[in-house]
Length: 59
Image (tube, rainbow, N blue to C red; front, side):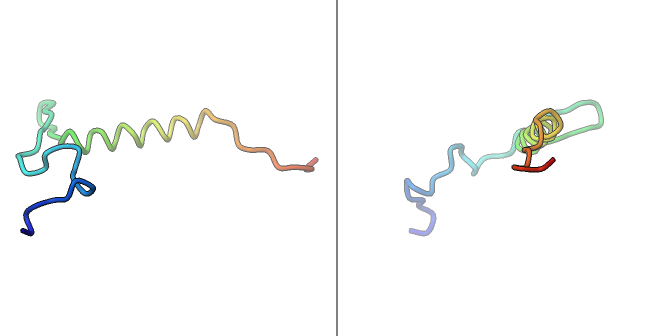
């Protein structure tokens, strides 16, 4: 019974299979890590582009 996962806790993808990897010559990275790095880069770029909030009443 422990191997059954409830519908509320089910993963959106099957995590019981082997991982998927991307190869660039000698560099090998999993697709999951590549997605995380992409999100981190996007957040960093947004932090550079978006303006800081301005304080009220500061002169």
